[in-house]
Image (cartoon, rainbow, N blue to C red):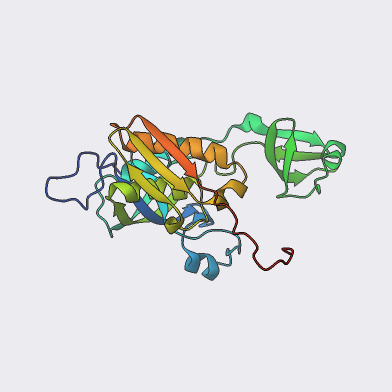
Length: 254
């Protein structure tokens, strides 16, 4: 089955619940490969547990999508346009609009000794890196192993069961949403957002200073916030450190 026809266009006047270009929305989805029904991605914890895919350290929650910002597979994103909040649909995406067509030239024979030197167990299904290429061992041929360097989903039709859960409308909530996307794991109430005509100020909790790569995340947040607020000229991040309370007991702090 080919990809379903997209429903592009602006939100109809008087119907603010219809998804259109530029909207920030939250979606839930379960993504499968059509040929074998294997789930390769999902946002729903109950489905993960039911299917034996639950991982303790993974986050199961609706995904933020900014329509038109290319955060999502384009062929899936265009199918969200025209949907209503609360609506569900099944979308099929053919290989050429998904992970691409399989390239037979990317099936290569690699000496077993080379795989062993990389520290990988030479067994079917194992992931291996050879040079700058990441591949999957597909066959053990004795002194050689056949490795597929195609993307794992190449050549497969993808099926998404997707639901539009929420549309973010409040300007401050939009800012909080993009912060959470870039810097997950810290509650929203730890941040304070304020705006003047040209400056948006985000007061960051001290906990963010201990997160790896937070400086790069802030660059992404700033870009997102400026895109959401075309009249703003700058984004300021503020972290406040208070003077520790003096020890009045005469005891040495532990």
